[in-house]
Amino acid sequence: MSDVRRRFVRLSIFLLPALLILAALHFFRGDLREAAPSLMMPRYAFDGVTFIMKGRSRAEALAPWTQQVIEKLKERSAIYGFKAPERGFLIEVQSAGAASECELKSNRIVIRGIRDDAPWELIRQDLSRLIARTMLREGAPDADFSPWFEEGVSRFYEGLQPPFGSRKPELIVHAARNPPASLEGALESRGGAYFAAVSHSIIAFLHEAYTAELIAKYAEIERAPGSVMLGEFQRIFGKDVEKEWREFLAQRQKGS
Amino acid sequence: MPTWDEATPYTERSTFSRHASVTNALVGVHLAALAVAAISHFAHWRVFLEATEFKTISALYGLQFWRFITYPFAHSLDPASLVAFVVLGWLFIRAGNELERDWGGARMLGFCTAMALYGAAAQAAWDVFTGAAADFRTEGIGGFHAPILGVLLAATLRNPRRPVLLFMILPMRAITFFWLVFGAALLYSVPLFRNGNGPSPLAIAGAVAAAWAYSRLDPRLDRVLEWLDTRKARAKFLEEFELRAQVDILLEKIQKSGMESLSRQERRTLRRASGLYRPPARTSHE
Image 1 (cartoon, each protein chain N blue to C red):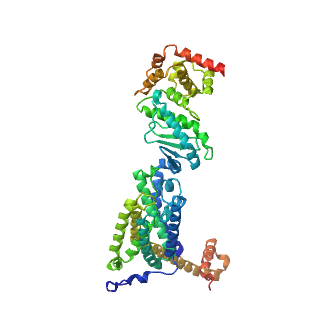
Image 2: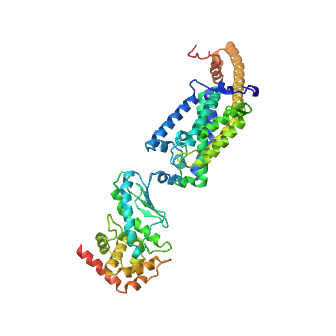
Image 3: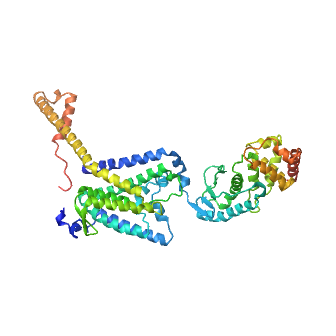
């Protein structure tokens, strides 16, 4: 064996245990392999909000806006009991995927489908909606919110500028053009086509037709531990609520 | 090698190298890295440290493999780390040059790299098993403590009973001196662990364990490789011996019956044997 070859063999044998250990660690924790890109993404922390995203300038521009959304929702906590997580928000912006989400009982919000070089303004819509949803859940951690209620409230508070919390005419018209067979069916729905539009239209209708006290009374039932019994909605808002809601939709469709 | 009677403040002067060596070059690169770290610190520019420090999640799962060997160049600048840099750097110049005279530059460079790799592997194993790897708040590690203590141990184990002078005054055995340095390094690194490119006691322990295993196993590995070489040479000699005997028989046959009398197998044997009688290739310096 030549001297060079012998040296190479010796070095390889010496390095082999380390390489085997590292390979074993790499395959032993496959979950970390998948989490690595987000764990390695730069983090920018601003007074209660941490952004995990590429581009410091985008994070710096988004931070004051996010803090404004949180403050405005805190001010409007009378009906829905919005509360910011004590640990602050962890907002992750990813270029891959499509559906943004916020994890249950977590302060983490994942905004997906935003390119690394996209302007920060594109992040606002999804972010405001998911902040509202997170703060709604944080205000009643033991509640088992009805899906329509969670979706409707978060859509209602979705927005690009203050005041956050408004009726969205395009969503209402969309719901009016594709109305569900019955209000009960809409209240029991857990997703599907027009779910967001229909859920938003119910919340928007409540804010137009009823007083804040009455809406807060129903919200209290939603915020109580456990799921909401069938018929509670009609008990609070009356038997004619479905008829009034359909009239509200028809009126908005005509006006569009 | 000095004996106990010869231990004086000048005893170790003979191990110092003023010539170009891989050890001296590595110290030069570390000095340059320290200067870059200082400039980065005052310029609030963290790119260098962020690119070189060792973080398990980036190195092992983000496939940034260079971090396994670059983290020794990510030096921190607190006073304790600067003192450690001077002390360990000085010990590395002495022990590293001595070792390099025996090993050669390439082996020295390979050994230093391997020590960094083993230090990082120990750190990675700790991070994975404790869950620290999955925590984005986990700080990276840096500093050349792990590879340098590995080199110190390898140099010490070559002659553990030789005399050295602690603080250039107190004579003691080299192995005692090493364990004192190792203990001090561990004590110093524990409070600085996970503190802005601070050293890691786990990386130090991992590199020292690897250096110890290397020092114990390398002579045995050498013997195994020697034995393999001998066995191969013996097999070749026996094969040649047998071939020469066959060639003698074939030549006799050719003399009697001519070339045409040889079978295909016998011709092949002759062709194989022709290599034995070829003169060795001339090397360029001849």
